[in-house]
Amino acid sequence: GENVEQHPSTLSVQEGDSAVIKCTYSDSASNYFPWYKQELGKGPQLIIDIRSNVGEKKDQRIAVTLNKTAKHFSLHITETQPEDSAVYFCAAIPLVGSSNTGKLIFGQGTTLQVKP
Amino acid sequence: SAVISQKPSRDICQRGTSLTIQCQVDSQVTMMFWYRQQPGQSLTLIATANQGSEATYESGFVIDKFPISRPNLTFSTLTVSNMSPEDSSIYLCSVVPWGLAGRKQYFGPGTRLTVT
Image 1 (cartoon, each protein chain N blue to C red):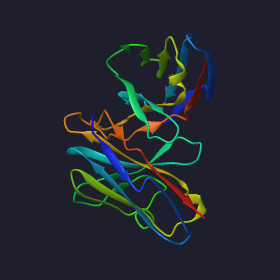
Image 2: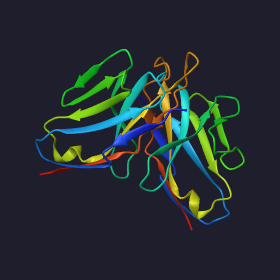
Image 3: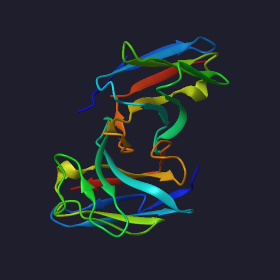
Image 4: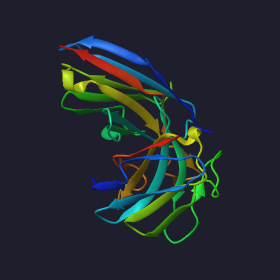
């Protein structure tokens, strides 16, 4: 089955710097890759996602890149702010046959700290 | 997206007892899922809640321990049965709104369970 590895486990940056979180997946049939932000005491919030037929997607200060050949995808946050501090999770949804199961397989999470 | 509520938001329970967690969505959804997040860990899928039929459980999770109901397109319950301290976790429901073909998935705020 699908396995998602996420690095680093913790990341500390100065306000205004960029942050990059990387994930690799094992199942080449996976075709959808979301990123979630989880603040303390809250449920995960979908912040950006990418499909396997797209190489890059941007939404203001957040971008995601996908390399299907290498089976890895990354989250890029530019001009970081203290409110970006949270735990970030990558995930993948594998296909079963031709069906999208909707079952999210999560990475281990990255705790991002943005220092003012 | 959808507005998702969970009840209770947190509870402290005695070992050997059971707790039923409710997940309510403000609009009809196609898929509903239940996840577990152990302290400081990532999210693990427990089961897919199927409307009007038995839930589909992931490896390591069984119906006797985690019975799930989904009587309609906006509501589901997860029961944690015969609890032990190892069941102390955050339990999260997630949903896929209509038309998103098993992709964009949104999470509820979670139920924080402590078993003593």
